[in-house]
Amino acid sequence: MPTSGGTAFNAYRQADEPPRAQHLRAAQGDGPAVAGQTVLGGKPQFEQESYMGKNAGGKSNGNVIDKVESEFVTPQHRLAIEEASVKGKFAVSFRAAGAATLAALEEGAAAKGHDILEKTIKQSSIAKAYPNNAAEMLQKVREAGIEGYVGHWDKASGELKGIYLSSGHGLGDKVQGNIYPIDMNRLDESLAPLKQNPGWKALPFTGDYDMHDMLTFRGAGRPHTPLVDSKEELAIRKGINQAVADVDPRRPVADTEHNVIRHGPQVNFSSYMLDREAGAVKRDGGFLGVVARPGEFPVAMVDRGKWSIINDSNQLAGYYRSVGAQIKETWNPDGVRTFADADKPGMVKYGRRDETPAKPPVPAAPKPAGNEPSAVLDRMLTAAQGGDREAFRQATQQAAAAAPGRELRNEAAASVDRQEPSRTQATAQPQPVEQALPGLSQPRVR
Image (cartoon, rainbow, N blue to C red; front, side, top):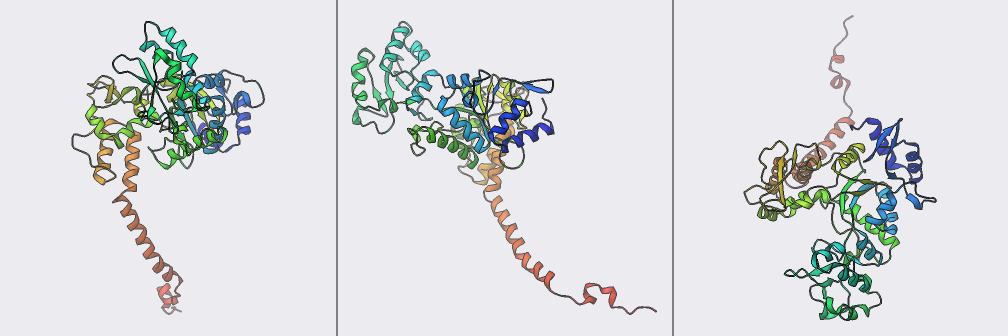
């Protein structure tokens, strides 16, 4: 599905239009294709909801918004995220949060970051912990009101032993390492001290909104994924959190624990690991497969105010093409480079679809820290060997921004500045006609 010049133009034109104009053009079929779309009779047919969805003054004409609000983000936050994506000219997709997490977020619960790795309390986790009496235990946690919160699970037995609390709980040493202990045999009694706080439902952690993709439509050139922790990425993350804070007073931007966006998009995971955790990648022999590879699907994409559901990698690649963006090579179903299974279970490393042996994810030599030239060059080499275009692009930009690239640019600019006054003076200085046009000083031949 190649992108035509007209389609690319429509994508950029749409980014600058007010929401109402986008809504009308979408209804007329004049806009870029999206994932899951087919074109019939010159007009696109797809499962997509226009700006503001069913709350824009009428009944929804599709099931996209219903699905988004039941599985991905809360209704209140959906509207805020739509507004942020229009204002910030970006597109982001989200992995499914699940009904239990969304219910906890609606109660004002804190959203966990990457520092908390344990699972939320929900039907699947209870079934795994209590295979013989899962229904009974699920009913117990639901009646206690702790479903959807992040649980602390015993490593040996797998049973639920506590829940994670955010700061400001006021429970003193009853909480150790953010974990509030509970006893499933005396659940109500063990929860009593916590529930003495009238706002207790906002104290435990639940899941955050996990971003899968991120594209910015600002600036010249094609849409692109912002660099890891770049100003572009941070601006989009802050834009979403600020928009949510504007409609949900329990989530001020300054309260990081209650921000719904806690980290960057999954598409940047391998680049982040190579840039910030290269030692861990080398030690583990690769990347965590469930995060490095695309998915889990479906994901919900909001593109400058419009939602769509993307069901697999092929549809995701189709969406990128439809807006004129380049999907990450290792995420492209037709790409040469891919992630291959590593020796350690659950880990992956860079490989090729033609069965060529995979390259190691990092060089054998130790890597200098920071943005030293040798460290940047190492990252460029690693990205080139692995076929990770996004990581290579990031490393290239880092090389240009760091010494000696920065020094060379500054030296060139200073050289031009030094030459400019002399050029200006030479231009302004009047010259005799004979010097300006030497041939005119000779006498005419009559």
